Amino acid sequence: MASPPSIHGRSAPLRPKSRGWKGSRGSLSLDAPVAASKLRRERRPAPASVNPGPQCLRRRRGLAVRCQTGSTAPPVLRTEEAPAAAAGARNAQAGFTVVMKFGGSSLASAERMREVAGLILSFPDETPVVVLSAMGKTTNNLLLAGEKAVSCGAPKASEIPELAVIKDLHLRTVDELGLDRSIVSGLLDELEQLLKGVAMMKELTLRTRDYLVSFGECMSTRIFAAYLNKLGKKARQYDAFDIGFITTDDFTNADILEATYPAVAKRLHEDWMDDPAIPIVTGFLGKGCKSCAVTTLGRGGSDLTATTIGKALGLREIQVWKDVDGVLTCDPNIYANAIPVPYLTFDEAAELAYFGAQVLHPQSMRPARDGDIPVRVKNSYNRHAPGTVITKSRDMSKSILTSIVLKSNVTMLDIVSTRMLGQYGFLAKVFSIFEDLGISVDCVATSEVSISLTLDPSKLWSRELIQQELDHVVEELKKFAVVHLLQRRSIISLIGNVQRSSLILEKAFNVLRRNGVNVQMISQGASKVNISLVVNDSEAKQCVQALHSAFFENGFLSEVEGADVPQNGASLNSNGAVYGN
Image 1: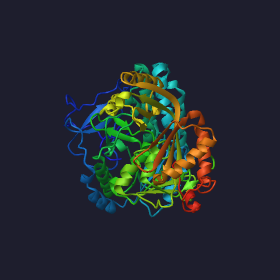
Image 2: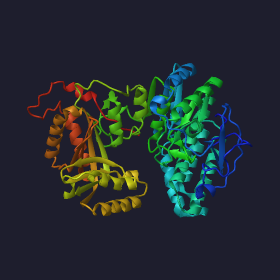
Image 3: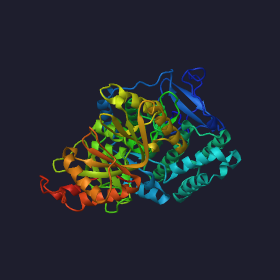
Image 4: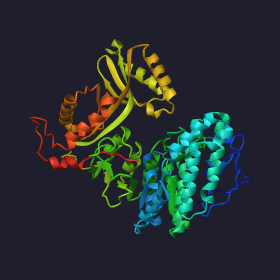
């Protein structure tokens, strides 16, 4: 790791003449639970060296973060201003060829880490940048441990079952890989102290939550880098927040700023030229542009880390290794006959991710699309499966339906008001209520006097908070409209060639009618790849199974009478949807 200080693990000592420590507007305020951890570990310089430039360090108990001097955030560069050509030239010299990202299920044990290491080494002609998630279910266990710490009391924080599971997994892994326990023991001690701090203060803020879950990626990358070095393949571990991943300060769901791209390219290039080693980078994490605190990119954010690095370095390909054979036509947990799909477009993949497919982060397609870098989804358990290639465009002339995606447990609002007739600004008034509460809207359909829309409660952390926010929304809307709140609904998204939407809808409604299902709302976006239908939660899985059978197994629109379409049914089965862990 390079010399600038990192939040976890080893770092360089504080400079005596650093500016901006005390009294600066940008100083780092500390959440009480973090302060309560009372850790001051000795910091040693990491192997590689990079000149950190005119920067300041702000120390937190048990950690230090590196910030730019001054009180303003790093500039947000426009895409066209990013030095893509220069980054590409540096990358050509550095020799990086591909990003390889591995999810938690691919790293669930010591045996899986051996498999992943062997997979990387089986491509001797590649020089990868490796991005890793936390091991197995570590992120879930960290969140559960934090929630239990709030109510358990400081003396019992060390006895939280999830903490014991996390310790056992990581210590057993380093033992089985023949590594020194010191690789993770310091982080495990720091994690326990943090949970004691949370228990003492009886609160878990979003900022502290991000710091808490960051331990998963920081431990998995340290273990994996050490194991590659043991095998004789030189590797260097990086915390993403320490190599230029600059984000907004929206804790738990931060956005990456454009300044990240040149910063990451410069750091990885200079380290490679100084001392070549495979970079092992933490996924999911960033650093707030103003707070300098650890931020996270939302669930599945390691995919976004991978595509951001791919764009920054101008690489040939971005590989996302999962536990399924690429992209499938529907969630195999809903319908076992889901089949692999060879090709998707970035637009299709983005819609799939947003409307419930779990294999990719919803925002992860944007950097790859901007950089025109193919994304290949592969199975780490079955490396010889062809997987799915996602590109900017593909031949859609013979495509009807690409995928069927289910998003369950959404809330639907019907808003009816005669004030909409001939009036301007009504929609703005409605959506300003959601903006004030920070609630996003999934689907929208309007008529002369009504608006129907769906909300995704899963994007809010607390179940209690969800109901409070929904009650407030209804209360505000009732001031100028009649409101019906309908919960326990599902969105079924039909991803495909929406230029043939009449054929898709005719087939879909025939199927749903025969199964006795009433569609409560329909929405077609401007993306031209998605039609969304809202049904009851209790009917959703049955609908997906019936639709998949009709579109992908019973022949090419075989039950649509009089459809003027070419008889090329084999092409239909070559298009599909994203799913996985």
